[in-house]
Amino acid sequence: MFDAKLLADILTVSRLFLASAIIGLGFLQGAEALSVVVLLTIAAWTSDVLDGALARHSRVPRHTWIGEQDLFFDMVIGAALLVYMAAAGFMNSWLAAAYLGISVLVFWRIGLSPALGKLFQAPVYAWFIIVALREAPYAGLWLVAWIVIVVIATWPRFPRQTIPGFLSEAGETWQYRTEDSDETGASPRVS
Image (cartoon, rainbow, N blue to C red; front, side, top):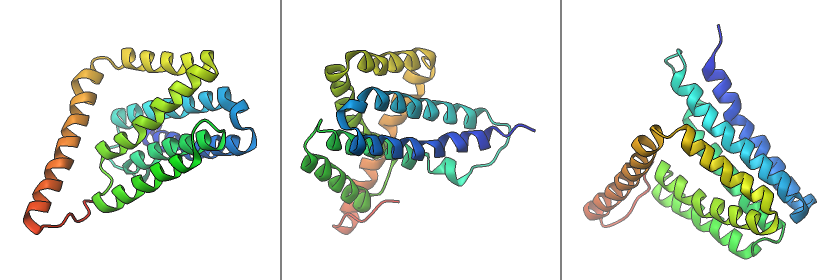
């Protein structure tokens, strides 16, 4: 019997290998590897879209540890792009290190919620798209085209579930933090 969850998990874990390749290209080839890094990023984003679709449509009613860590695997790609851009000279290394360091402190202090994870990734992806459009316009257009295609392909789900889901997660994270701070006077970590 075909196990869609297993295939979803393989796609999820593949992002670790893609992230390693992105980082390696940053240190070994720098800016010259930008078009290849764009393709690796598109592969990572595609694996994210496909693993979620496979997991949702699986007939196996179980959750896997890898599936539950999907956000972590997503964030690894964002962190890899940040390291790549610093190593390739597309952004200041100190700025990249500060962004990573502050993010780790925030996640350690508040916890890793889906909304915070997406907020961590958004500026990194935006900067990467800007860099790609500026430095390798055709490759940058591949990123933009991929986003447009995925939004169109997932259109009923995107405006009805994705955006409201993000806003709900952000609201819940903020509400929990403010309620917790009011009760104790401190802001302990949220799991």
